[in-house]
Length: 316
Image (tube, rainbow, N blue to C red; front, side):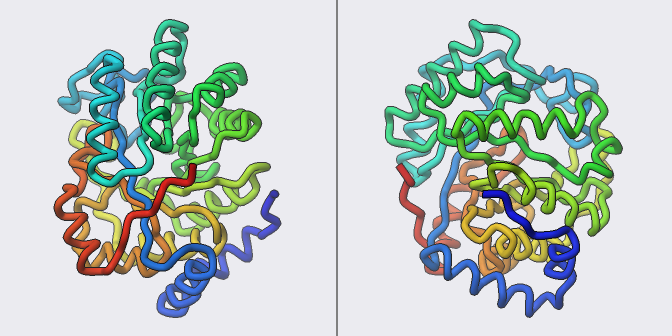
């Protein structure tokens, strides 16, 4: 059901005193989820680099010299080995990302469908992020067993052209609509640190809240500046900004998983704990998020032990 919350109401939540905001978001979290449970996900780059898009933060764009080596679509066996290892390490959702604007090759798409079927057969939730989709592609992914589709809005409609020019905001919204129509769970969030204002962050949350099918999971990313990209000199995002965004997302989307995503490797245990207190209940585990560093499984397990956190069981 569409959320009828207004942009002004989201703004009031976002700008409320931080301690009060965290207390409120923690209460909402406890009312919707089992306290102390966090969904553990693994993200694998199944096709790396040589992307035609010009996303200003992305090291995989063919337009920038970032040192990322291009790799063709992975073999099925390699993907299934990675999924099996992820499951053994406690992940319940396996996400596959491909760096391209959209899937033009039917052969490649059939190969991705094989990956989805194979991972689904392991009992894992299956997510993918493959750029823009057609209606037919969305329905075929659903038939193959896809659980969720990630397609981030990144930022507000107003700020978006300052970050990306090779596709429009409506292109992104159209893909999310196709995903929802295919009865695939929507995974969509944003990136902090793209030069946006607080009002841009509020606007993005309002756009997500206005979707005809609300997101099942909302990644909150902090930019990881990469040399060679237009945003290489971006300052580190404040933990207080991350906490404020996570808490607001938790209140606006009480039943969604709020995923502490990119930028987590640069955060201390205390900073991550604050994010969990504010309502984050999902992470990516493993050494890499596509091409950027991420926290190790061992470090995550140690932090979970300290905080008394347990891994969430799969939904299916």
